[in-house]
Length: 378
Length: 92
Image 1 (cartoon, chains in turn cyan, yellow):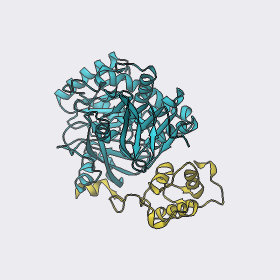
Image 2: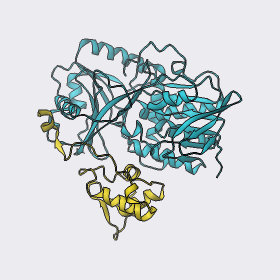
Image 3: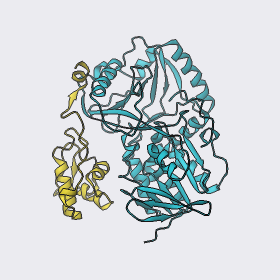
Image 4: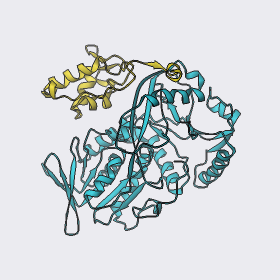
């Protein structure tokens, strides 16, 4: 078996799988290396939400593209990924939030997200039946946002990579980046074999910094634990993903395909590190927050809690760029949005690599940039 | 993955209605651990969180791939131990 490929991708989450799929489609011989099973990192732990409501041009346009990919994925990958445009409703309980959302909506519309709109509290209750509108001023609502099933998406891409002649090594851990002649040459693995390729992509998500260090490249990505829970499946209630940015808020949605509610909140203060432990605090706190927003969910039963890593950059924007080491690329730092951004990021990364361009396709996503600005709808 | 199911098939995961053929199909696709079977088929993702099927899935892996049961990694167990309503969790 040949150990050489055109491209080695480190990381079997959505970013690695989507990038691998588009590169394989373009004729590259792809080898994807994952230290666990596919989806074992962040992607398989996410709650499957897909939204276009961002505030930077780059993210909005990528998400417009991603939604096109998701809506076409059943045909493209030959597998039902349970894409469903159930919408996203961001809630505003303060005049400041309302003002910020109104400004965001104008930005989003100017970049082509036509169906996002402000809804007042009454209409919010209409688009989200059962929503508690006490103290609610309204919300930013986009009906074309939606949901999909992460495992199906990644496995769909993986099957395509294999059918296009690529290889996938699961349970294979990269321990060193091979270099020579001033450029990347491949990777060494804990299991022994070295794999050679002229292009190596760091798509290691929460471990992107560690992989970068193996290449001597500084990648400012820090993992942060986020907890989640899921309920039994119940009748579909036609509620969009609800996002409540208050410090005692959270976000949750109901899967269209099996009726399960799934949700999480961003802990304050944040919990840095690779831990994927879960806490009793979350198991009791998240239901409080869900019932505050939709009281009728009281009898719905929680069947599991877990946690996973956000892979954060200092400014909340991803990294999609080449690096000072020739042939070594970084596609990471998705800041909790990897699953939704993945399809478009993968397509864009494949084009970037194919063209051999010097400058990254989106300046805001450059590896070496001023990280002091902020994505507001993080 | 319902395509391979037939009347002689056995249910492995009762909560998610996953049959032995579907587990075998996942193994054909390269799944070699209970974690992978779970994520390809949903066996163990339902109401009881794999109480019955996790042993059965490991038995099938043993049979098909010749794995030593002692070497098989169990899927992660998480709270709650049994389904609990949002209200009870919120009030306690």
